[in-house]
Structure formats: structure tokens, C-alpha cells
Length: 168
Image (cartoon, rainbow, N blue to C red; front, top):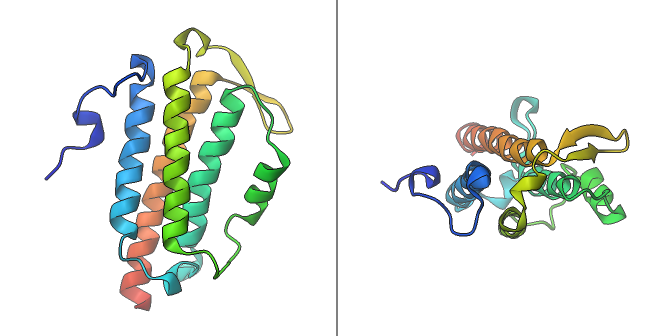
């Protein structure tokens, strides 16, 4: 049994203060790959007991990382990001499980690049969130990105298991 990412030691070039964020994201990436490996396309948009679909969670995992890391850079969301947000969870049978997993993996890679480039002296700098310009900090956004990812990963795993047990 492989050790969880956080027990494998420091990640190269990631600032020590941001290691927990990187560990959480890489752990989520491994678990998504594991649990989605044999997940059927026909179950991607099913909502057992009104739960959000696995497709929604996969879209949201990628999207929330993109949005929160954008805010951490001090940038506003682009029109493309806003359109992706609006599309999260809308059933689209042309989208395949592997495509959603690949998009999540690419977002993790971008997040790791940003974490490696983050000057830890900026972690307490104020950043604004959303149209309401709610104040946060670089560190608050990065930590919340990791926390939010693990929260939705858990929901995805439960929904995937329920769909497989009840619907298959």
C-alpha cells in the first residue's frame, strides 16, 4: 500500500509553507485517477437521491482550482472562466470521463507551477474574491483551494459509489 502524498516527504521547489496545499492537490489527483478509472460514461451525469453528479464534481474540481488560483494571483475571472462556471453540472453527453479527469490533471499541473512560483512573502497580501470583491489573502485562497478540492473529492467518491451500487 502506497503512502499518502503528504507522508512521502517534501515536494521539490514547492515552498515549505505551501507543501500542505500541494500535497492535498496531488492526493486528490491520485484518488480521482483511481476511482474514475473504470467509471462508466452512462453514470457520469446521474444524480442519485438528488446528489450532484460525478460529472459536476469533476468539472467543479477543475474549475474551483482555476478560479481560486486566479484570485490568488490578484486577477479577476475572465469571460471564459465565467462561462465554464455557468456550465458546471449541466449534462453534456459529449464530455467523457477521461476528458474531465485530464482537465483536472492539467489544472493540478498549473496549480503546482503557481505554488512553486509563489513568493511566501506575499502569503498575507490581500486579494479580492468575486464580483463582490470580498477580501481574502493569497494564503487563504490557496489553502481554501486545497480544502475545497478535498471536500468535493469526498463528495465525488461517495456519489460514484452510490451510482455504482444503486444504479448499475
